[in-house]
Image (tube, rainbow, N blue to C red; front, side, top):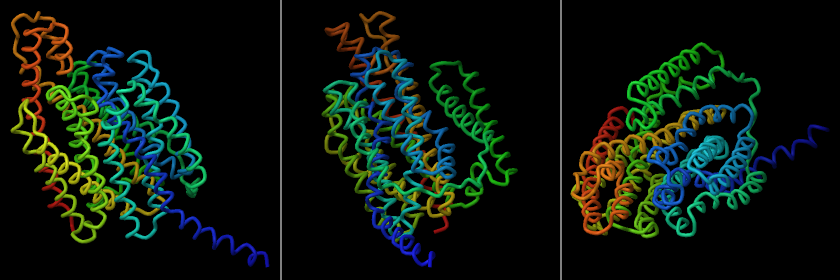
Amino acid sequence: MTVTQSAPPVRTAEPERHDQRWSVLVVLCLSLLLITVDSTVLHIAVPALTAALEPSAVQLLWIIDVYSLVVAPLLVMFGTLGDRHGRKRLVLYGYVIFGVASAVAAFAPTPLVLILARALLGVGGAMVMPATLSLIRQVFTDRRERAVALGVWSAVAAAGAAVGPLVGGLLVNLWWGAVFLVNVPILLVLLPAAVRLLPESRARKDRPWDAPSAVLSVAGVLALAFGLKEAGSGSLMPLWAAALTFLSGAALLVAFVRRQTRLRSPFLDLALFARREFTVGVMGVLLGVFALVGLQLMLAQYLQLVLGDSPLRAALRMLPLVVSAVLGGLAAAHILPRIGMRATMSGGLALVALALTPTLTWGVENHSVMLAVCFVGIGFGVQVALLAASDTIMSSVPESRAGGAAAIEETAYELGAGLGVAALGTITALAYAPGVPAVPGVPAGGMDQARQSLASAAHVAAEIGGATGGALLDAARWAFVNALHTTVVVSVVLLGLTAAAVAVLSRD
């Protein structure tokens, strides 16, 4: 009799939770949007932030890049923690940390405080991001519905990165700190909604927590990413030390892999990489985001510092990128079942490469129509490719390991974003500095400062003023455009090779 009385609640609870799946998707996508916006929100706000806090070139690079460099190594650890202890709990804790860090960043009195606050934002983001994917895998059990849900998720992921400069352009006109403070009221709404709507995932206490694996994964990815970044920029250490850091990271990751092969319950299921589709999907995410986020920062500077757009006008001119990214994610959910993963992903990456090609003919003149066309192609192509990669990655794993798979995908996403900014930014900087000729009337110290970045050249030109300042700014603008062409060539080649690799390695 007791069994008969307890059966109805068990049967009715599942449909009720199933009926809320689209509301759950809204909460998860808003969470993802908040976090991905933060990765690019400073792209437009850099000039205003530089004027307010006066960071050095090295500090400015860290303010922009530390978020992704902190998120990337923590994603795997928090993904597996969510699988073991429950994803909902991790999301709620991540909200709190993200909100506190946002408030600190908004009122940061010095560049160092802002760098530390951005790092704490990365911790909160790393707690939330893997859960957004793994909870979708948990809630949407039908593969067709899951493809639609992943299309929305993928659109939000790219739209967040794309809309970041737009948000920054709107808010920086009020006050540079507003780009961070806006997170707080949004989180105050999201927190109670998440408490009520997000499902509890089954905690797997039977899966032991391997602390050495956690340390090896975090330290390895951090050292690898930091070494790559420093090898290009040389902002904190010489080349030999950066190379040693990179090799140390690689050695730690080798030790991590060897440890996983010996554990009965591995910290991360590396057997997933034995599946060709999974590996191709991760590669597509890493290189697609690498090109998108790195180029977005360069193009935002092109609009403001070369074409002279205000932050708001530059943000509005990037709006086609946002709209096309959203449409690309939604369209990809219908394209993928019809033409397959190979054609969807390789075609999307090839479209991005094609859309970038016209920028190689641009100078310091305006190209309003072609700029919009290029942004549409970039946003749509990246989104189509990312949706195909996400669907392949998440469909290849059981629900119990969804957190680990989601963490791998998000690690690829954040590593791609961080390394895209660092690597493409470094390529631009290396090509830019030699391209700025000595300008008569500008002292040697001023020329050294002008060769650090286009923003620095604009600052020096404003201080000098007159015809001399104008000549310096013109020379710096042309040097930046030529450097941007170099960066675009690297990106087009990389995207083309990735599209070809996907076409060759994929089975369908």
